[in-house]
Image (cartoon, rainbow, N blue to C red; front, side):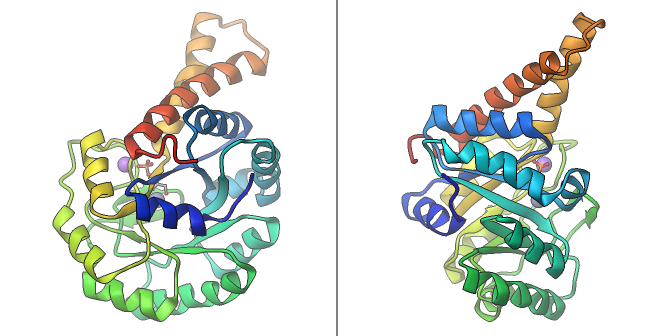
Length: 281
Ligand code: 13P
Ligand code: ZN
Ligand code: NA
């Protein structure tokens, strides 16, 4: 069934694993993710960014995920990823989303706090957890250009969490959205320092392209949610391409949709193992 991320992330924090959070673009990807989670008996989060929401609508993604979650034997959450405004976060909550991120990381410290707090003040009374971001995750996610630099400062993180009342915090420790040119160097020491002064669940963005060991070392140091997006897009598109290349006369969207879906499902099962959330549903 559809759940909020409050208990889901608290349980992950207590038991030392991470919930996999997977970006969806279409119905087939949503089916693939939920079916992978069921096979792995893992709690799971499906999330959409502002540009994805623009492609279809909050209501359409919510309807897909809710219909799939209704009969699922694992907890499922639908989350707004990189929420770009107060208005969009509120619309997502109204549409039924069970978790939202407000991404004020492009703002200065005080402005990020003010924006985040505004969202928390609306979300909390509705029982909806809020993820925020402090510091800058590199690369380009969606329409937001993260740019470079700006790792999360532990003491700023502590103050940010206390003043905003957020439920979880995305940290910048050297990851970037998209695939990496080389193996990125993660500042796990910094993560440890943040963990010492921040009690809420911490979130890792930009996991596509990280080694299993890198993801797991972050989980050991307090990451409770790991975001995967680019890898799923690649898997889906490769599945579709394989069918269209092998049988160029294909006109049935079900034929290539199914192939994309299968690739995404295999990938998600693997990432759930890496996150150690298998069997935690
Ligand atoms: P990747 O595209 O690198 O997997 O990043 C995912 C992410 O952080 C989504 O918010
Ligand atoms: Zn992200
Ligand atoms: Na990445």
